[in-house]
Length: 339
Image 1 (cartoon, rainbow, N blue to C red):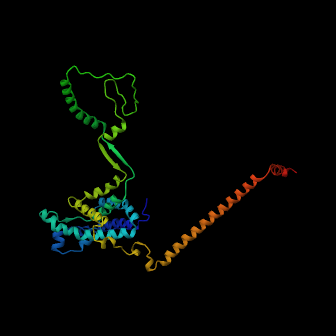
Image 2 (cartoon, rainbow, N blue to C red):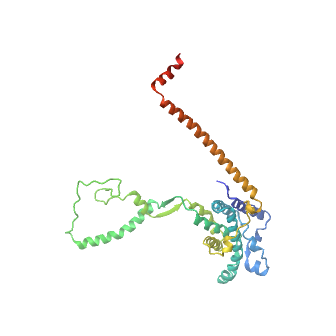
Image 3 (cartoon, rainbow, N blue to C red):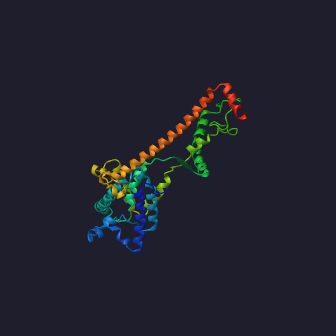
């Protein structure tokens, strides 16, 4: 597991860790969060709109943010580095402009000036990538975690107490004349089947698979563990971190469903910015060398296959000649070395 074919994700992780450590060493972490009424309106520090998503304020958020970006590198591999970098830039710009605007126009007035704080960290960008991961990557398997036996027995007693009273009422209404029909003595059942008979006087035992599926529990998949670090980021700076995560998820969903303007979704960064050689600006030689190398390897493979087929053909010819020999020639070949 590495950052193979995901250079943009690697750059994100290295930049997040390096900048967070540098901000802590230089004691400038207070320059990355935003108080809209103080920093924006009073002092006019508009540069904070472009810097509040660069670093996290504590080591725990740095750890879980780096883990999440590492898990989400598969999105870059599926999209390609150029589209992934373009998506990150668009998410960064929209988050930097719209989050403070929505907070000033709606959240702060509705909360009577309480929700004016914007915590630092790339939480909106991470959740915008997480929205793509949730929609693009399917789960490979799922498993179910059931409740302990004591909890299942307790719930079974509570559910079985109600039908017992109804059964008692129905039996009293029917009177003593009703009797159960005798069961044939020759009928046998598979003890491991769904209708396995239990002890005398008790109903048949249910099938184990049916009991497991019907018992209360939670269903998980192989992707469930990937959502644990983002959940911590979601709850790290209450009550504002859920709002940042929701905004990032919304931007990612709008980008995926093409609800944003077409110019934004179709825009791409230059190829040289992410290490992709563009054939239109000096990449003809590299592309030509790559195709020539591919053709050379294919030609060498065909030659090897041709030599192998020639050897096989010679062996088949020899076998055919040996099959066409008569008995006299075969005897002469056997005694030829004895004289």
